[in-house]
Image 1: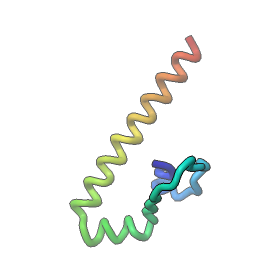
Image 2: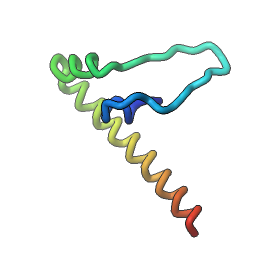
Image 3: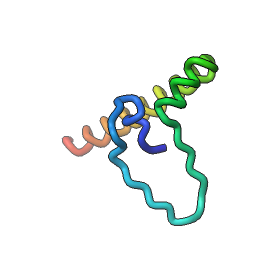
Image 4: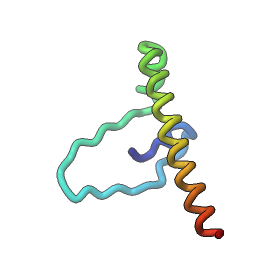
Length: 71
């Protein structure tokens, strides 16, 4: 998953992704997320809950890495 911070902050994604094999990429636009929130609020709530968990795990991992580097 890439670009999720930009989705919430309204900023461009900072990551570049290069695939080493063929795959499928899905993109969720701000507009599509807004439609989801309006039309299927339970799904949007589940999405936001998932994203909160994902971003929290990433923050915890980054914090752990920084603490180990400072020790």
